[in-house]
Image (cartoon, rainbow, N blue to C red; front, side):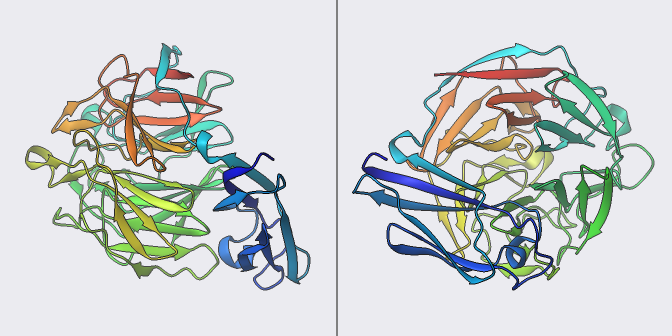
Length: 389
C-alpha cells in the first residue's frame, strides 16, 4: 500500500465454537500488538459480527499483519484499510426521489433497523389509534412492504440496536389501553426480535425504568443511556450489557447532559449521543449537544455541537461511511425540519447536506447499499436519496 496514515478495521465472527475460552488469539499490526487474547464467543457470542478499529501508519509500502493463537486457530473475516485523508465521504449533494412505496399505515416516532439490506419499521403513533403494534419490512429490491410479527406491546420511544440478525428494543413509552394516547412513560422491558424466526423474546430488563433513551451496540456489548423516568424527568444513567451470556447490566459513566429524544449510533468503536431535548412536549428545549463515549476509557467527550438544537432523531440517525448522518427531526415542539446533516469525527465538524424536499418530524431514515431511505414521520412516502460527489 502507499505510505501514509490509515484506519484499519478488522472484521471477525465466531462461526463454530459453542462457548467461551475455546478460541483465543491475538493480532499484531506493523510489529505492534493491537489485540490481545481475543475470545469472540466471550465477547459477542456465536455468529455475531465484531469490528475492531485502529489508527496506524505504514512507512515501508507494506501493511504487515500477524495473527497468533493462544487456543485453537486464529480466525479473521475481513480486513478493511482506509486512508485517513479519504475517511470522510465527499458528497454534500443528495438527489431525492419518491419511490412511490408509501408506508402501509400512517406512523410517526416509529422504530427501525436495517438487516440484509431491508428496512424494518416497528410500531409508532398512528393517528387517533396512538401507539400501534403493527410492524412491516421494506425491501428496496422489490420496492414493496411485507407485514411482520406485531410488537409485544403498544410501545414507542424505544432505544433500538441491530446486532447481527437480531434487533434489540430497550425502554419505552407504553400504551395503557387498547387505543389512544394514555401511556406510561418508562419501562424496564428489553426485547429481542429475530428476523429469521420473526419472533420477539424477552431479554434481561434495564436496572431502572426508562423511555426515549438510546441503545447502541459496539464491540460485543449493548449500551443504554439517557431518556426519562416514570415522572418524565431527564436521566443520564448509562448501563452496559455484554452479549456473552452474562445477562447483566453494568453501570458505566453517566452521560453529562441528561436528555431524551436524541440521535445515537456507533462508529469506529465509539458511542455517539447527538442532539435531543430537555423536558417534554410544550416545555421541551432542543439541544445542540454532541458527545462520544469511549468504552476503552469509560469517558464521555464533548464534540462540536449541531448548528441548532434538534430532537426526535432516534430513528433517523445512522453511520454512513466515516460520518454520522441525521435526517429530519424537530427544532421545537411539533416544529419539523427538512435538514440533513453529516458529522465527521475526524474533523470534528458538521456539514449541511441537501435537505429533504419537505420537513419531516420523528421520521425513519437509514442507509442501504449507499442510498439513504426516508419514510414515515410527518408523511408516509418513501423517499430515496442518491449521494452525488
